[in-house]
Amino acid sequence: MPTREKVTTKETATGPSYAADLARSAPTTELLRELVAHLRQNRTLLREEWVARISEARLLTAMTKEEIFNEATSVYDSYVEALETGTFEALQAYARNLSERIIPRGVETHEVVGIVLLLRDVLARSLFAKYQTDFEKLNRILDAYEPAANRIANTVAVGFVQERERVIRQQQEAIRELSTPVLQVRERLLILPIIGVIDPQRARQLTEQLLRGIRTNRAKVVVIDITGVAAMDATVANHLVQTVEASRLLGATVIVTGLSPEIAQTLVTIGVDLGKMNTVGDLQGGIEQAERLLGYKVVPTT
Amino acid sequence: MEVPILKQGPFLIATIQAALSDADLLQLRTALVHQVVRSRSLGVIVDVTAMDVMDSFASRTLLEISHMIRLRGADTVIVGIQPEVAFAMVQLGLTLEDIPTALDLEEGLAHLQQKFQTAH
Image (cartoon, rainbow over the protein chains, first blue to last red):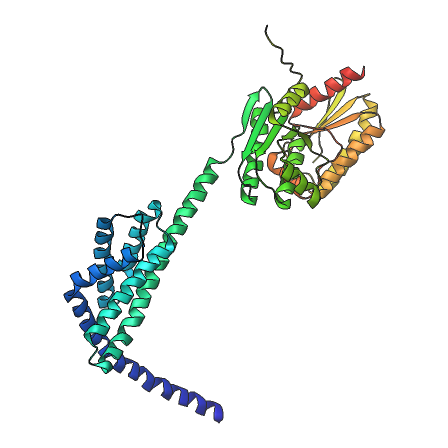
């Protein structure tokens, strides 16, 4: 039975390799310990070397020398600790905390990755210097050091990017909350000024707000002003047409104002059916037409 | 469930009070088309405030009611479409093209009265 034979070979194969792993990992921890001791001993020297390299490479220009030195000290200690314990949670937390502080000051991703890589290089150089006589040992030390160092660099970079993404998400949320007001300017006349980019989600929110506004204000005419909208794609344009039709089903007439020349051209090129839409050049014209529809007449008092 | 049809001056008002089956809708159509001439009405208001769902059959029937009543010499206004229903209808392409619509019964009556006044 060839199949079973195969399976058995496989099993026996995994056994020794696992044992070899263990055997190899024991000296690895020992080497790491030696490495950590070395880094602790030369802490001041290596840290200064690192800071010098940072300013040489013109990284972290948004921060003062003193700040860089303080951060460098903390990063160095966390780095050595991560090497020693093999756990990255503390370093990750520190990276996130650091990102939180330096992102608002305009520190870029390449700078953060750059300084961590510099630290890795500085430490590696010091190892070369220390073990230059014992090539065999240097090799094994580097074997232990490199994966850990790379993982640390990875952790810090990921932490920074995650923090950046969190900030971006937060800002998007804030923009969404600002949203668009539905305003009543006269009895039974609403205006809906739209500013900024309309994505499908915002478009849906706008429609909901408008339809609800029509009902609560008992509006007869709605002026949607899109002067502040730079561009519009087919999906959003269709959504706008649908909003106009839905408003009509609630008994309200919609006037769209402020279509920019670009949007007008795009819409015609795309072939969106705007035939059912009532459009006026600017907001003032739109409000004047709405007043006519509602039977208002504005006359000067003098 | 039968839909009550009330006479209010020169207008007929049909208020739908619950979700209707297809048969009920057809029954409403027949009743309105008959009564509009019998009561010498000028306009008909169909109030759909209570309808949470408007499927293609319902909106087609409303369209038919409107067209039939026009042939019988009166106007139709659909009133009380809910915001959610309105948007769902438009997404399904059910826009009730040429039927006048109004927010609620009061608006519908005002619309017909205005039309009636300008016509005479």
